[in-house]
Length: 307
Image (cartoon, rainbow, N blue to C red; front, side, top):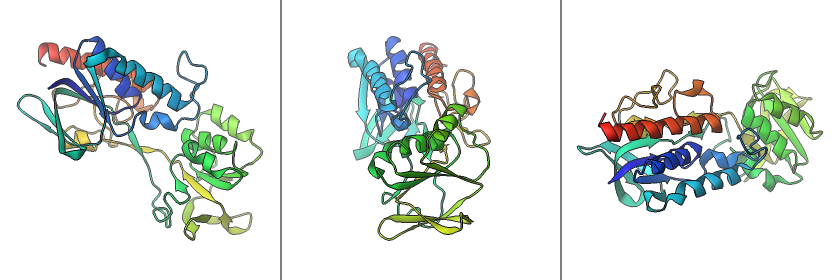
């Protein structure tokens, strides 16, 4: 049995593992994808100590630090399918029907990309429709693409896509962006980005692969705008499926509810990162790391005191 099972392989999960190992706790660090959502950041410019670094490179540094503690940290790539409370702690079911047990759990599962639910989106997913512009822009070199959204991921994605694509349409349902001004300024510098504002995507058009997009109103007289790819960047939903199965409470908008010590309503279960109600719902690398630090300390205190 592990002292603590940390579910999630992003900033929060890695940070929690580092602190738990420093407390000499036996840790299982498990998740479906190493790096998590951190891998989707083409450029990170707000992590202290790194003026500019690629998201995947930063995640690799975090991973290397987390697994540097020898036998204290067991690193495993696997999907956690279920979690339940037992008399001695918690049991988690991994893929392949593998069972692991832990005295405590830190959920650091982050968030899942939102889908628009428009016609053609599912049909052309992976055939021109993607949910990570910074990940997939390279495949659209010298082609025309659309980025849908108005937040950081959309505006950053448009700026990155503009580096390789011939033309980028940035489609946003409002007139103003909610993205960080830094990224708005960056994308405005790109001469091959066209802002399509106060419009909504209503259908993805294609034949075996994406060939165009239809908006709720014509744009420059066009009912259907020819594009080779559509990057949907409209935010994420907290990945709270596992804590919900354990009976953990959610807040009014569906995030894992935690107190100032990152404790959930279930004794021995903690949360950190984008899935929680903490940090004013400000999902940043720095806030995820901070929450994970507190969660690890709280788990250590729980194991020491039993409460």
